[in-house]
Amino acid sequence: MEFPLPMDKVSVPTEDDGKVSVVLVATGSFNPPTFMHLRMFELARDALQMGGYRVIAGYMSPVTDAYSKPFRFIALSSLLLPSMDGLARAEHRLRMCNLACESSAFIMVDQWEANQSTYQRSLTVLRRIESVFIDQVPISRESLKVMLVCGADLLQSFSIPGVWIPVQVRTICRDYGIACIHREELDIDRIIAANEILNQNKDNIKPVTEPVPNTISSTRMRDCISRGLSIKYLTVDSVISYIREHNLYLGNRLRSSPAALYPMNFKPSTHT
Image 1: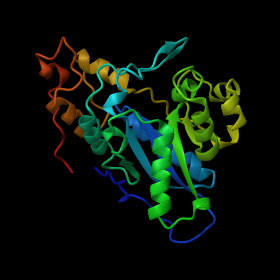
Image 2: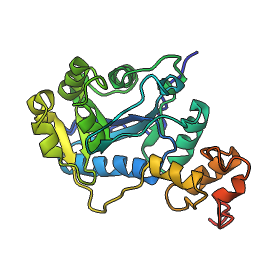
Image 3: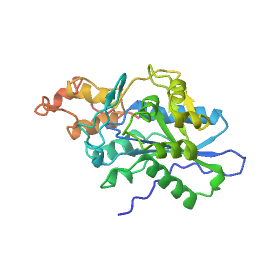
């Protein structure tokens, strides 16, 4: 089955002004998507456009269900990466991502990775999106740049043995580039300096400062849900409504009482 890349929000340049056109791509579980996921795209776009680039599109690429246990991240030192226990099915995560980016003028959802029967590496996703743009968008290869957008925690995971394939990390850094969002208590410059591959390609890694610190995470949202706490203002209302409708992330202790998810009896607003 074909899964075409959505192109409806792509901002194709009307004239050649010498700027490089950037496509931002975020891979991950999006379990569920949060305001921080959306903010990463906005922060990266601001930083790159201030640096003379033109951001023409952004894509969320949720992982396949096959990512669940074989590729679970591990805790190492002060770095705590999320376990994939409780990974909602791809169909749910895709729908939530589409709901989350409905109001965005440039963020879209690529469903290809989520629909694969085997785990796909981030490099494969970047190459596919680059290929589609080269074939379908009237932009020269030299003027197109597909970049991975991520948080500093993911950048640090490049140094964890067994999580990433070093030769693929080198290709991502050298041939594509990374827009890396600052995360609490993580020094991006130090992470780069401590890793040979990252340090060799540091000119193609764009550290992005976050002027309004945001520590919202999917892991923390799932914890709130399992404890029966409100998640309003952590993600868009339509995603909250979807989670409630499908009884997602309740955990064993709350599956018999999904209403506990919403102490305020939240319903999406009908005001325009």
